Image (tube, rainbow, N blue to C red; front, side):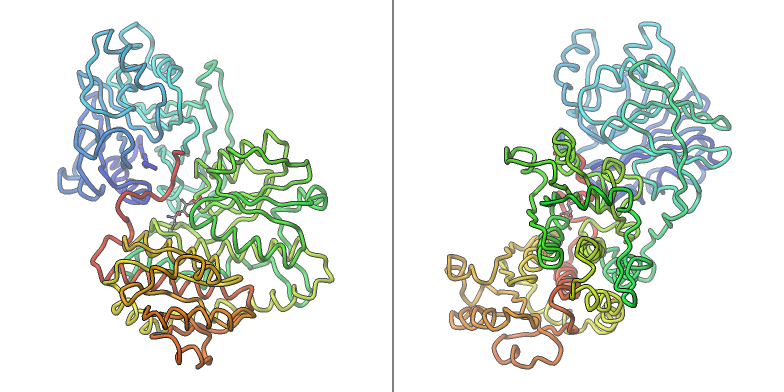
Length: 609
Ligand code: M6R
């Protein structure tokens, strides 16, 4: 939540920062702002809404600045308005700062600063930062020390960038529990919430750790020190050539559509080099270092949120069926509160696209305290979850910009299938057909995406309904949950996912001609029962849009409308089915004229609990 970017020494620092904010828009888009410093003079420009609006407020390419810092806001403290937009400054406008995170003790700090004569112009928690910086400068501290002392007063999670006229040309940055990464490109330095800001332009990135702060000056190596004791800290830059700058929309109208269309490629990337059907072999290099501990695993707990949690529910079925290990999936935000008995042979698997989700990080902390083996299924290289797990498997979905997760979900399910096979005995008879099917899937996805007219027609027909049920059984049950989440997230239509068998236990009461159901009715051992549920809904005049396997004509005799998807194995069918439901949600949102990529009230990385 919230994205920050700052730059020193670039030929056009304002341009780079605004472009960076546009790339980071997925992290927040309530308001945006930039502070630019030239010859010690600070100028701040803010806007409500997307960072692209900044371009209307000043000439981004013609403005000269030695340093610049910017922010995309996802509102936490105080409503969306100009005073609450970052950057925030001290009263004299000589210090500017931006912050991604939350300052838990801000009320106490505000009271203290107010007592010392400071006044505040926003309701945000983070306005205390420039005032504290100012306070310690006024006390006579050198800028670097004043910044350190200010940081030392903060309780919470933060990634902060700051500029002061007392150190013109320098950019200060620090992090604790929120992501911050440095890109170094010869003369210039960039500090940002995510490597996507500079991937493609810099080949290496330095991931700052908690309690790190840094002073960035053009032409000089970053000076990283500890907030705690001011000692020098060495952070070795890491290669980020793998993170391609795939962040343009290309020919697509929206990122969400582009990302759905990338699914074939991402499933391919998630299997490349890992599965070898000819040798009945699954090779997950990321798990090799913990092979022995994995062998002792008697139980698995998957922790995740949102779409990643639903991927986990599919993973649960896959691992239990294929590897025979008991699995439980918990919402990360609930896992932290439970007092269930765990033994040392319980392995935790954290699933996260962003790798920065606060609740999932919290769950990993608990796993740490219980000395469990922690594995990650993460899409963002270098992210906190990626770094805070003992080992893991990378999703290879590439940057996902649309708030609604699509291609990352299909990659997660692909990886979970691989993990299930890797955990299984070599003699498992399911492994080989599953591997062959994973190899075949990208072509099936491509075939499906070559003609989406039936999905578009269904979206047009159903876009005006106010409520939806999504139902499925077996492997299709989590797909129903995820389909409902996708629809509500981008179209703001109320939608609930249910196990089809639950209909008679309550939800059927809601069914009438105004309450449609999306039924996952692809071929699987439970299809006959699902067909009965469809009949029961139709008997109560409920419209039914079904997903069926190509060639199965039985479903269209019962459902009102049918979207056909290619046949797959029961275990891999969720990948195809969820792509169809992602497209359905997308086209409904487009029909309704909504901001598909940036749904109201949401942000891509949920970095607060
Ligand atoms: O980055 P993560 O996978 O940890 O994010 C978890 C959820 O916040 C995320 O999946 C959210 O539900 C998506 N917006 C759904 O499309």
